[in-house]
View (cartoon, rainbow, N blue to C red):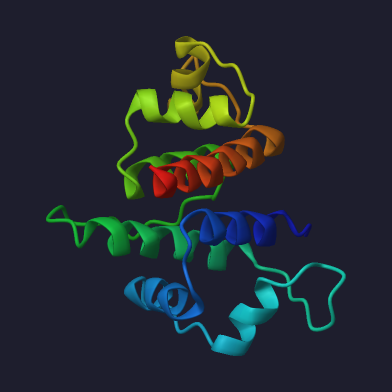
Length: 158
């Protein structure tokens, strides 16, 4: 397992300026008991002592908790089916959690110097069995997260 999941977790928390207490609260909203020391080790650089790999379950749980943290509990009954966490799903869940509109997503990618047409962008959010579905690469996801950091940083200045 690579440390991509750690990088994603780190970049989301950095972009949203979340402190450790908020991150632990986000995990608790998704019914996950995140320990402070474990979280600290997940957010370390891979070359640091005590670095721990963030597994897909921990990343997915964080993103699910982020939706609850940002939007509150949904009135719709949640399905407790297990779904494989993909880069496309991470993008979709971040769009939901942060209530991002299409033009904001375009701006975020633009801040990361990624040019996507409207068709390419919508293809990232389609279901996998759709003929126009486009797989979100690690590079595209990381670029999005870098753009997200810029998007929220710029918003703080204004």
